[in-house]
Each structure stands twice: as structure tokens, then as C-alpha cells.
Amino acid sequence: MSCAQEARDRAALWVVAREQDDWSESDQAALDAWLAESDMNKAAYWRLDHSWREADRIGALGRNESRRQEPSPRGRWWVPAALAASLTLVAGAGFYRSWQADQRQSIAQVRYDTPVGGHRKVGLPDGSRIELNTASAVRAAVGKAKREIWLDRGEAYFEVAHKEGRPFVVHAGSRTVTVLGTKFSVRRDGGKVIVSVLEGRVRVDDVANVHAVRSTIISGGDIALARGAATLVTARSDTRVEDALAWRAGMLSFDQSRLADVAAEFNRYNEKQMVVTDSTVSNIRIGGMFPAAKPDDFVRLLRDAYGLRVEETGREMKISS
Image 1 (cartoon, rainbow, N blue to C red):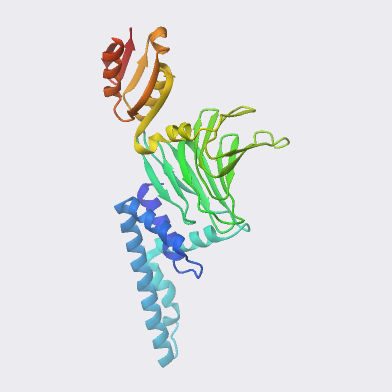
Image 2: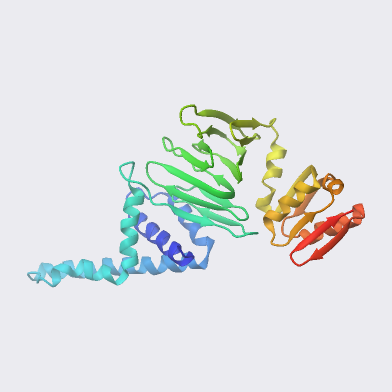
């Protein structure tokens, strides 16, 4: 689906949602956040909202006219004729009714993603927010009865609006993360899943074996690392969680990390890749905070601090002793 089509589909959901009796301040805040994401969102919403209002106006004229005279066969069809002027909105309205339905029907999914080096904030209809890191993709299905997210790749930070009786579930590989309202991030890196909790509590379930589901509860300041059948929870440290979320401010934070691991982390954010060719150099320990989008500046610091050799070849920076 193209970005323009995605914007039109989402706009249709919002237009119809605003007509519902249970529209709330949190719903309005979520709409405002979505509109603020891009001019494309604003244009799609304003265009469809205008079409919707025009259909209402034509309908009112039709109803007034029907009071004065017996409606003709042609006049009885004013509604589809008016709405035919905006088929996208009609499709969106039906799409919203499906999206709005409870467990009786499946909820339509909406996809959001970012390129390498990208950073995107998304508002959901329930008032929750998603912040996508570099090269990430999620699918969201948020309705009246359930709220589900699929992290297909990369990393995302979630600020979940509390909704009693409506858990917010994130699926990431063989793990699911379930909350009611909190702030946390989930990173999917191959078969490894990392969950960092900034506030509140979350439940991490291993769902690879449906006959023996294993659960781990973690709280604010905890980080859970899951791979295969194992889940490791680190000692409580608010600082470590904040460091893990430094990407939200465009930074990368390291605490005596191996240079090989630091290079791999920089490579997630940049087309220009660092390649450490010397095994001894790979084990140099690095600490500090660095701009994620400026690998060249970091490499210059390495050269000055350790006297390392840096060879640039096209889209690579080869680092050796």
C-alpha cells in the first residue's frame, strides 16, 4: 500500500470515528497527533471531511424536498449518488465499521514503517502513541475490544493509554508483551527480543510452545532479553533503560561496549557501514553518547584517541590497527 493510500484509509477512519457518540478528548488528541505527522495526512483528512460534510448537506436538501413532494425514483437514490462523489470515503466508512467492531469480526490492520535512519511518531485511535526507530515496521489493529501490534522488524517505543479491560498486546517473534497502560520499548533483532520498561509493568510471554506458555513480569527500570526458550531480566536500573532509549533523541549510548558491537549499532542507522577488520581492535571498550546519524565523527574520534587506521571505500569505513 502506498503512503498516499494509507493516509486516505486512515483519514476515512478518523472522519467516521468523529461521528460516533463515544468520541472523547483522548480520541481528539490522537487525531491531532496523526494530523501533525505530515501534510499528506492533513490533506487526506480535510479532503474526505469536506466530502462527508457535502454529503450531509445534500442529504438535508433531499430530505427537505421530500417533505414538499412525493419522491421520484431518481430522488430516492440521493444518498448513494452523493456518496459516489467520494468512493474512497464510503470504502473508508465501511472499513471503519469493521475496525470498530468487537470480537465478532477481525480488525483491519494498518502498517507503519521507517527506512534506515528513519524516525517516525504515530498516534493511534485509542490515544496511545508509537515511536518507530530506524528500519522498523509495525502493523496495528486497534478497536473497541482489542488493541494489538505486530513488530515485524526493528524497534518501537510505546506510550499506552490506559483502557480498563482492553489490554494492549505487542507481538514480536516468539514473544508477546501485554500491558494496560505504560511506557516501554520492544526491539526485535533476529531471534532476539529486548523489552525495556520506562514506566509501569508489562508481561512478557513466550508463545513459541502453545502447550507451555512461560511468562515474565517486568517493571519500570527493567530490561528483559529473550532468545529461544530463555528470558533474562537485568537488575533494575533506570539509567540503563534511559540509555537504551537514547535513540529517541537521535543518540546512541554505550557503557564499556566492544567496538564491534558499537559498530553494529551505528550500522543500524546508516547506509555507510563501519567494518572492524582487526580482532584486537574489535575488543576495544567504548563508553559515551554519540549522534546516531554521524558515524564519520565517531570514526574520527577513534582515529584520534586510539591511533587506528581508517580506510574509506565507497559505502564502507574499514577500521584496523
